Length: 275
Length: 353
View 1 (cartoon, chains in turn purple, blue):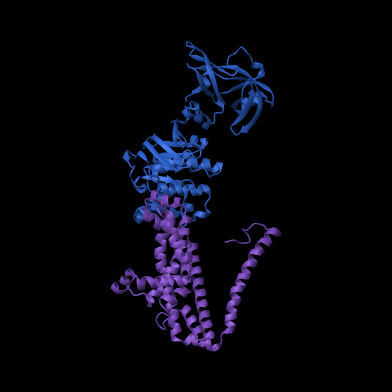
View 2 (view 1 turned 90 degrees about the vertical axis):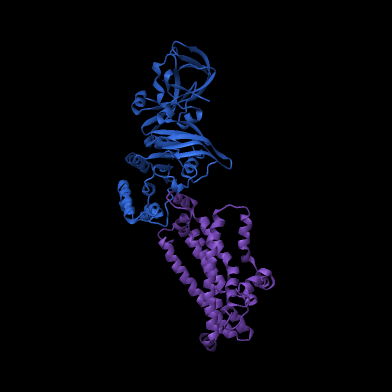
């Protein structure tokens, strides 16, 4: 961490340089905070009470939290091996594989939902999964996780790959001469050294999954008490004219996200200090 | 013992070509060469970190060519040590034992033994980031030695250290190697370092072994111009043999307008050297143009190099000499002053192709 004692002596140019950076930071933060303040001033006591007492909204909050957590877990489960393979191994078609992994990042949200809907309702494989295997995703709570996974897993993979890229291969190679198998070298050296980037990937994935809206509306819909999550609640409330309630739900969503991100950063930060 | 038999490796344009080398039991061997010559690659091939194209590697009489690095019984200290930054010093040293599944008691006694030998007990609880270069070197060495390997492979182990620490670590390396009787290969590009630790050495250039032998032999009798230059011999001449004295076993060589008398019988065009420390310099009054191998040269520049003085001479040809301080003081040298230079026939060495 940079402190006054270990930072270099600054002349006026240095101070202007630092001040410029801080100015941009302040403008951006102000922009976000002002938007939230505007929302806070718009809502009323009745809207807050509705949000706090409605069973449907509590259910939507619970759905948002658990689905995004499951999605993050699944994404990291894929991200660690995929990121490691893309970072460490040279194979034919590696660039193509790397590009395909990134593709969901640039999917327009509606396209992701439509694609999933078409796959599971129109193709033989999709129908087999839904009907024969009994894994129903379309308009089902399980579909929320699948939708979030499709859109958010790429963020986890990208971060994890970058984290493994940053781990000097010499460490792994030395571990091999010290009695480790390739798996041992990965588990004892690469994984702990890449933990920082993996945690960052997890944060991005969770945040993306938690706020997802577009694909969910198409693939799972927004059925009260079943497939409704906070982001779709906002849409439902505003579409029936309850703008105050919609904004109150939006603020709840922002508050939960803020707390979750802070906790992950602090816990992740402690883990990193231990490194 | 370490033996490589016709070891070949290539990556991109670089190739290690058919290297056959034998390092005897308990020997401290220096592998020398300029940066990019393939020293580290060769070491990594022995470690099993690089897959060789052809040939065989034997460690302690066992063919380890196809074995994984962990099955080769090697202790490897890479360049810049590669200590694990997420572990403490103690955890770094224990790393190999834990990876091999050593029991708690055995682990404790082995670590204690090696820590005592290297006198690093005070570092055990420290983190890697706070260690000095010398301390890191000791920890890396402890991490490699705790597994009780058959051979020790050191890749530029002291190149990042200051002069004083480098000497200290070299003494330590030599002491530990003798104490454990470990066959050791020490990769370096530094001649002083090699002299301070090694019994024998090899010089590598562009993936090819140039010469193998005891260090003094490499110094006095280099096989070719590259080895001569690597051993810091600057007095390299090329001349034509004009006559031979079979009785005296001498050869007269024409070099420009000058003639040199060399010990030995040679033919045709030859390249020959004289070590800077073999150049004898006397005051100008000792000059006599009838004497063989006696020349008058101009003392153009000199500089103190710690234990000796490097003197540059020019005139009819250029020459570099290394003189002891007392001898140089006796010359009462001044820049631009003429001196008499004597080159003894037996001090010349003729280079091969």
